[in-house]
Length: 157
Image (cartoon, rainbow, N blue to C red; front, top):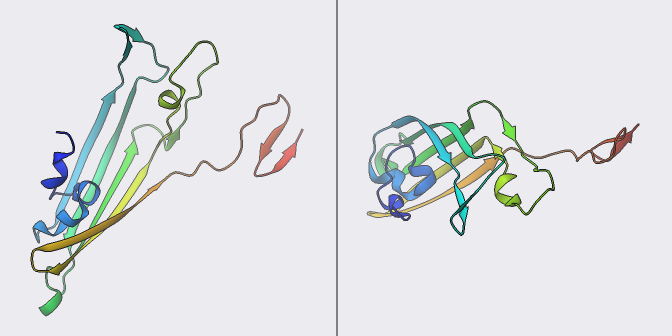
């Protein structure tokens, strides 16, 4: 749809696609979904083998208008989305250095992602929204030498 979904996103996904769209209705929206994408790359008509060829996970989200009275009634909305890969909290693929590869695509971190959003009706019909995106942290360090392990600046043998 080329990004056009942001104009109509008024369900639980509105917090991700269009935070201001959370105010299009004053009903509480809850949703559960599943995301699956398969990576198929070709170069000059030849299929390029990938170490990790798909991504999948569950999506949980909700959106609601805050229950204020009088002047603030239906003026502020809150949205929340969580993406959780099906069988892990975080996964990183680092391919062997054997031939030219799409390293950034193959080693793309797959992790749980949390997105929160707020929308405010400033003037009747003008909604302003914003959100924050949180993901798993890659703390620690990489073990590159046999027998030596490094974690947060401390080494041992």
